[in-house]
Amino acid sequence: MLLHEFLERSAERLPGKTALVAGANRLTFGEIDTQANRLAGVLRGCGVGYRDRVAVLLDNSAEAVVSIWGILKADAVFVVLNPTIKADKLSYILNNCRTSALITSRSRLQLSLEAAASAPSIRAIVTTQGRTQEGGDTATVSFPVIGWEESLAAAGDSAPGRRAIDIDLASLIYTSGTTGNPKGVMLTHRNMVSASTSITTYLENVEDDIVLSVLPLSFDYGLYQMIMTAQFGGTLILEKSFLYPYAVTTLLKKERATGFPIVPTMSAIILQLEKLREERFPDLRYITNTAAALPLSHIRGLQAVFPGARIYSMYGLTECKRVSYLPPEELDRRPTSVGRGMPNEQVYLVDDDGRVVTEPGVAGELVVRGANVMQGYWELPEETGRMLRPGPYPWEKVLYTGDLFRMDEEGFLYFISRKDDIIKSRGEKVSPKEVESVLYEHPAVLEAAVVGVPDEILGEAVKAYVVLREGAAATDREIIAHCMRHLEDFMVPKQVEFRDSLPKTSSGKITKKGLRGPATKG
Image 1 (cartoon, one colour):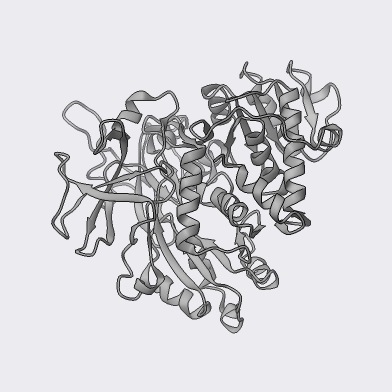
Image 2: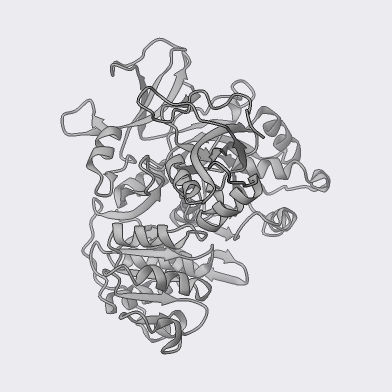
């Protein structure tokens, strides 16, 4: 089965049902399917073909949803990018996966043109929010810049012919790499169909479900809300952000949402809304949480605010989407557990020698086996080899997550720590190397090291340790402002600590082992 058949089957069965509410837009399954067919025709007309990559640089919107489905219908691979991406990273990704086309908004067109000018694979840019006139900011590129409304209006309603099969790539999802450059997680139609089916199975989704999501579509947790609602024929209420929490919770009640995916940052904000405790949400059936474990106080607080909702604590990583979930009836008994492996998946722990850990309570690296496991990292065989290793059968690969867990006698998982130093903040993976590279660009910085420190709201907060050049001066605010100009918002350090020196190995390499001690220079 191909991923976009979820949309097509719901459009055939429920053509007039509201599938998406995004701002002022309310689209039915039939309307989304038709618009996606038209976009697929537009992309084909621009030379986009089987297995080509198409990037989407849009806020959460109706156009973003149509773009993803349209790219799949064109037999291409979608690459959804964080809306706050900077020019350097955008250029890197466009070149890394040799993107054929880019769909973006008028407000991001200049950024897109600058990045695309150095990406020879780009054949076209499709821009929403109005047609771009000839000349001006498009004069420096050789490819066409096409207006969304005009191009879709002129396209046919029928889906183009397809060549893709379920082992073809459906998506590349870029995450931070240990080298500092983003790496593209390769996911096939089969990978994504399997993950979505497993999740909707344990959430017991039905077509009456209405899911309200403020999570960006560039975050796989947000992306799968769109995929899953199309699969079970439900409605997705798509908001751009959680910047105005009262407005979101009002919408939650107004639209009679039954599902509400959150991350711990959101739960912390929700529990500070005193007026919310006076409200009632009788339609809300479940709340899901991933990215980082919910503190026990958050769990209790959410239960008080949403007494009728079942709370699912989950764990996952982009390389396989989801690993485990804790059945809500186990929440009071095992509040610190992230549950057991989800349907159609096996999980186990291994020690440092690769032997399966059989004794309860003993730490080991978590290994995932299932159809949801990625195919690897785009054109990174060495990094792929570290994550995907031989499984029980000679022909298969299993995913070594790099995360340490313990497992109790009933198979419930408890997270311990990460084996590498990748920081997971607000549900996003942050490469310390990438942040350090930006810090070193500041003229006052001599040495820099970045680590994750525990944070009740963020899971982990990004913290920078900095040594200034002799005679140079800089404040923590100046360092943070510098990072804000060059990094996506979730990567910007929340804390900066100045040191006289950083600890080093005998070979002179900076080591981070002793960095969480008291500051020596303020």
